[in-house]
Length: 450
Ligand code: TYD
Ligand code: MG
Image (cartoon, rainbow, N blue to C red; front, side, top):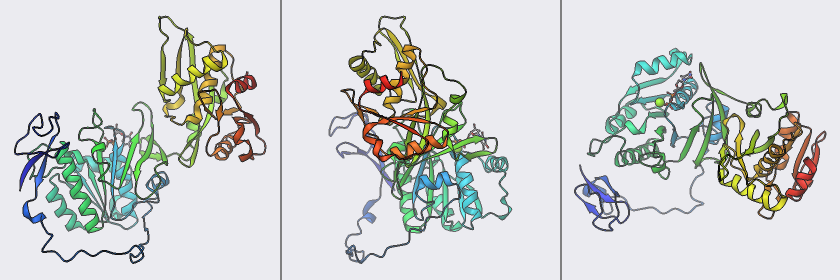
């Protein structure tokens, strides 16, 4: 098989790599692709194409196999779907191989054969990880292979006939028909496309590991998102032990779910009650600049402590810094605070932080961020038994939030006594023992709290 280079912008063909496409003049757009030759031209020889009506097509039972790891099953949308291709990506060292080895244990323990193909670690290394994870391999249908050439990989999959295949990682897999190095755009894309065909043709579930490269784009998971069925991201801070598993795309379930794990001495452990983790030391002290916000991750509520520090600026222009909350959102909130409630932040640096290293992207955290800022500015602590939810509009109005009932319920379960929320949400929430405070504007909220 020969290979050619195609421009990704205009489709121009070339026999060798060029920095600039002669067709459209774009830079760095030529990517190598395998030329499959006339064999691809099956139009005339193959059986006639059959068109089917929607009602003719038999519904197949969505027989996803639950892995028994509930946090993962929820994110996957029930479990491992047959004949699916799942991409698990994340920074190197975050725990992708660990998670997949644990999945392999569960699936093979349920009597389904699993093939773990590694191109990064030797079989010895995987064995020692397995013993660290206390996997008792004697009763498992778990097979390992060290192979990176895609054709030979396909052979071993055909021989082993597994239910599930794990490819660790896609960056090490290569097709010998292509001249470019493993991990390059051309290799990663071609090999993933071949694995997709294999998954559909043979009915195996394939999980591939993809490292997020430094650029995030080149030869990384973003390149593969449209090819695969499901894209999962395993995230977390290196110096912190918890990990969040999110679905960015899922043909078998919702993309809003998040799974929470903790990396321990013996692998990833599910965290059933993550709110307790992200609340930090909240109850033990009530200091200025701290407020608890009930966020919603998919269908699951999560209580997060927002901390703000407002301090006299030492420079001409005040600094704004955030960790775990959206920077631009904080800028917007400070602007609304200045304009609508007369809080003068122009001479102050402001730092906003979501405790525990979690990331809060919802606008429902706006009101909490605003109150944390004002609390720190005025040096007045906020009632530690209060939770705050609400989106702030540019005119200073407090907009309703989705899923208010769930948020309040979670807060009540963790012992909070009062909830400040948009007035429009008041009718949706019935939580005995919880005092509801509805507000229409930012000013009203400030008056009620301070
Ligand atoms: P790994 O799964 O190899 O990461 P990835 O495949 O995403 O590159 O995990 C690597 C880290 O996890 C490593 O720093 C050690 C740590 N770890 C534990 O803390 N406990 C364990 O039981 C295992 C297996 C790994
Ligand atoms: Mg790994």
